[in-house]
Structures are given as C-alpha cells and as structure tokens.
Image (cartoon, rainbow, N blue to C red; front, side):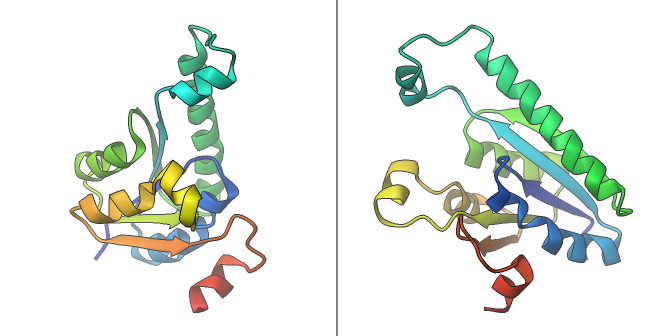
Length: 158
C-alpha cells in the first residue's frame, strides 16, 4: 500500500507529534520514512529583527542545524526498527515538500498543522494548507495546538 512516507518536520514539538502516527503506518507495512526539513531563506523580518545585519554564514548554520536535528530523529526511529532516510532542502517550505514527495517517490505525506487561525494564519500562511492543495499524493494531516494537552493518540480520536 504505502512504500514511502514523507514526513516534513520544522523542528517544533507540534510537528513531531506526527511521528507516532507515522510509526503506526510505516512499521506494519515496512514502509520507509523519509524525514524532510526545509530551510527557508532568511526573511526580511528576520533580518530586520537582527538589526539589519545577518552573518554571511547564517544560512549555512541553519542548514547544519537542520541536518543535526534530522539525524537525531532518524536515530530515534531506527532504534525502533524503522527504515529511515533524511533530506534537507533549501527554499519555500510548501514548494519543497511537494517537490520532495515526487523526487523521493513518496506514496503519502504525513504532517501536522499548527492550527493557526485569524491573524496568525494571515501573517504566517499555512504550509500545511499549501501542501494539501498542491500534493499529487495523499496527505495525512493532523491538526495540533501548540499547547496540546492531549496526546497525539487522543487527538486522533476526535
């Protein structure tokens, strides 16, 4: 059924809440989990917050941090007997996630949405929504609040 599940992670605990679901899908099917972290270009807002001065290696440092992060998640999943590969891509998150699904041959994209609404959604947009509309493969999306009191399993029952 599913041979490769793409899991985009942004480093947040909210995004990582998809991992138990992915384990339950990938494990019994012996599907490979493809972990993806997208490093976006430094935004004008970030540059402004840094006083207009951004170190030349800031983008490279973000890329290295993303690789370290994925290696840690990969180790945790492989210790559970899952097959995992990782990839870090550079660019707009939604575009890179959709492109990676094709490049990696993913049968499913599994991700959380931060559940922003109102002004937060207007200001930050919704990567999850853009992926949902552009993806050529099924998307398993679970809405999680940043301060989720429920476990991911409890949230899935709702």
